[in-house]
Length: 315
Image (cartoon, rainbow, N blue to C red):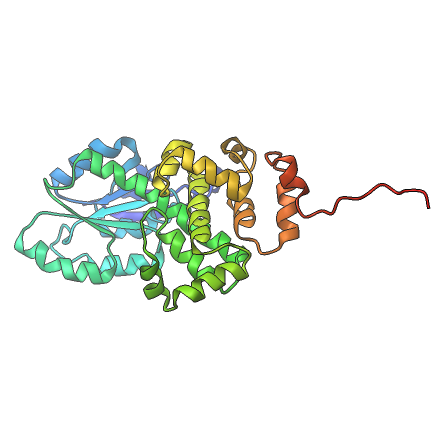
């Protein structure tokens, strides 16, 4: 049996390097792995290897897991309802949620009676998704999980950035719309989630200098799309669809109208905080300074708000 004897970070190779050294065997470098599997079913292992290739690392013991997930490159963990010894994995999932909240935990299972019995406990422990053998565990579906992971990361970054910029009373609305950027959420659903009425939501938006709920929704989607382009290297066409826009033309129009920029400007301003300030800062003077270096506004937009100075005439 493999035994965990040592785990260390190699500072010389960077902070993302994590190695698991097993007694009598070579060190397994999980730093380049995006997906980990604590699996023993050969069907699940084969599907993960086919879908993720070298980005997948298989762990053989539960004791290897906690050191391995400290590598910040790891995004998804696959496990089964029962480990190799037949013990439930729900307590492990609960512990993982305390150690690394951003890790996506996906349970792979067949429909045996013991697995089905464990499903409720796993749900209460905080699993993210369930894959059923030979139902939704094909290669395309598995790869889609990674794409969903990039959206999850961008939303988390956008929420953090907007919390530093948006007005305190507006932030709950911004946060909710960021979390549901790619969904068609009705205003009544927003009212229920936040516990306030439509008029209050509109007042929050207008007090922040925005026209209404729709403007906050569009800017939230726009921030997610910008994050997908700047932080995850998505093409604008893909980012538009994943952020909830109907097309890349819709994204470009929103970017021009609300951020006074074009898609090519995203390469020169790759920091999400910069765009968050443009979209949600309540300080109009600061927003005007940000716009002045964009170079994408018309003359009328750049001079809006300034009084024309008349030439002096002799007395």
